[in-house]
Length: 618
Image 1 (cartoon, one colour):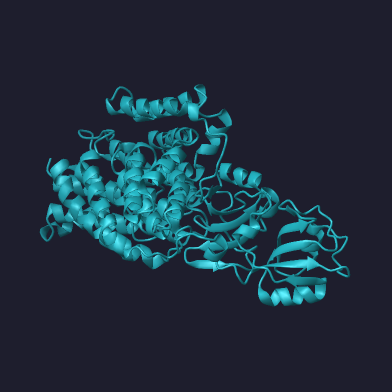
Image 2: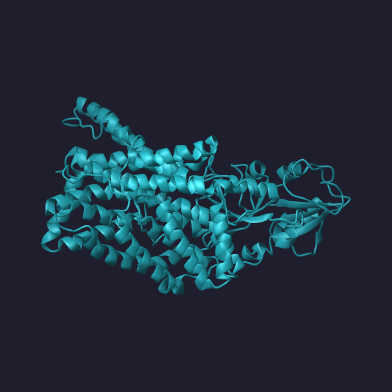
């Protein structure tokens, strides 16, 4: 019979896994729920013991242990790395790099693919790989557009290569930083220590080379071209039947009404996209404009609604084709753009209506793409998810504001004038110094990273307010919430119980085979839940198995860490996969088709490489 505390831990893990997979609430909220459940274990079981339901009470974690995730070096290091990444982004160095790459690739898809992998891999080892993809996404889409290449052929490799790059250094991904802290906390005292900055590099470099060769050969053949080479965005989103122009007749009941009143009173699914009056074109905000006879409106609606609308509202159809050029006549600028919902965005779970998107951003959403699925009508009440791509019509000023907004990623390079180009050497120097100090063990990584974040502000690379906007707070709360779960697994005996069951198979499986099994199980787990959560669940068990076998605990911890950093088979397995899901127009099965062979190759290479680099025996 299992002890009550072990049953409680298993119940918490099972509930967390279900919530992580189904996501009725964001994963960071689930993590905080895990934390609260662990903290309440003491008071609740004490009350149950007092009434005779339990023989004795138990507390899985103390208050100090439960809240330790918020002050944990891993949490603070990840927080600081977001700030350092933002300091690099605000110099505009990536945009300049994109222009250079576009010049040397000259529309050759092989060169574009090679350049994408060659840039994001090393960059992801120097700054957080999720931040690297967010920064490079517009550049890669622009690269595809200039070379008349399908963006689908470049975006999935962008995500995968960022994962390869994340395995190069300790700071390449939050997973590495978290695993380092767990190893220092939970490993046997004789070997417990944080991972060194470049401890990952020998095996990570092999994985980067192997993965890059795969993407340039087999992966290139398997990666589908879901979106045609970019020409007209209205064609890409198949808007021909949903965009049209209407003119207001003299007898229209809309004459004299304000646009916002006309829209709020109608039951039709329609958006007024732009207004042409007296040879002048107006974009959002249109709400306060009074409708006049002869006004020409570009509208988004379906054909059935349009027919009814013409009758009821006194409008005449204009037979002209509404395309991207037509929608960019107002300012002869970039008025039609794709916008991706970013991880940690306040828009996740909201709809366009509940978020008051049109009013908040002075922008009209013409269509929504989620993977290969397109929404071009009844979009206002669709709950938004990370990776959703919105086709947005807005003024040049509004597009620049969207580009500066942390909730969204504009999927094209925007000509902005607020990049601090003169600060490029300073920002790069700060990141290099932070990495260098940690690499030579002059100071712990959390100290050098926090010092670097402070230096970004002191030197003017970042403004104080931008520091808070740079942090993906959902990741911080996720880490703070799940770290105590690893402690609870260890103290309750749950990790030891699972480890004993695994070790019982040692008569059949060799230590090398068990090492490979940990990689495969962690990789599969990471493909359906958070990578950080899978590390917290698997490292305590891996360390227990290593201790029981008398094997090198670092080898088993590294198997878990590398597996959790490389989740290729689902869009939900890693944040970077979600980033490219909408802009690439991918289907869920595309990740399995391209990612499963790569996952199998990495399982073999990692399992064979770990004993060589780290040693399997003590």
